[in-house]
Image 1 (cartoon, rainbow, N blue to C red):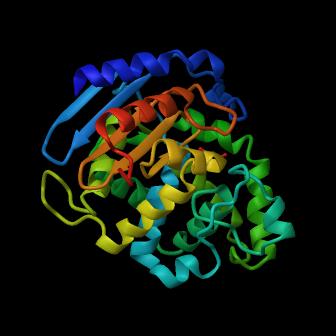
Image 2: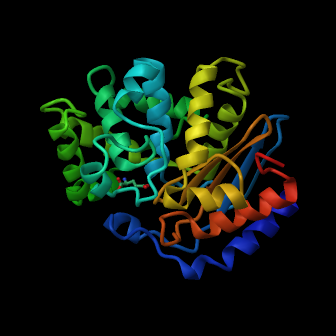
Image 3: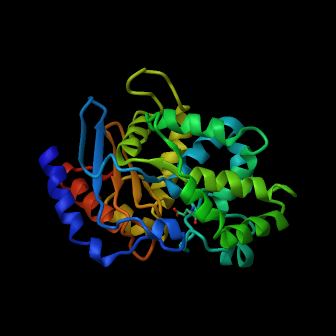
Length: 303
Ligand code: GLU
């Protein structure tokens, strides 16, 4: 496994120069784009990490998976999907065009509009401290904290998400007066500092349908995990989700911090960190790495 992971890293490394870090959040633009790490935790107890797998970076959109899981647990299916749909949007993650023109509801929970709506359902019943504790448990990583620099950097460049949130408020999807606290919780969740290893840990819990591999405890309801993995598969890689599903075929979620969380059902969790992004916002090296691993280990969901 280790040799294959090293080989995959070398393949991924070749594409790093073709991408860029996400400079629309200035603090992310300052990250060294040459970093690259993979971590794999398997259901039979193997844990391998190669490269920069213990370097901390911000989880960004991968937090949308955690938020969705917590909302399904706490608010239930009906509330979560009453006003947020489950269809791929085909648009950029921060687009608000279709939200206004062709649909009154966010397309899915993996894009900003859907995640903001779902975050707003959580603000009356939980807070960041509790979400942080749950995130640590799900990622099997007690060292996860808020990256204050990224949090402030994003809050200082919040106009687009603010526009989305107020549009949602105008459509009665976010309750009146709840936009400021929704944005704050959303950005805090995006600013959690994780590692490729943390993502592999979370991936393993999802691969095991919500069972913690060390304690044997059920940390997420089986049906919640099923919904989360399905939405990751159809919508997790931004507007590159369809092509990714064909070539890689592993339910995954990426973030503009350069992380990718991947779940191979009943087999393994994979975490990747590679902050050089392609034009859709996915880790460019991560994409190549996953293609290679999928082919060599037969990980495609339909193979
Ligand atoms: N915090 C980022 C934003 O809302 C997350 C985007 C992402 O990772 O896709 O713009």
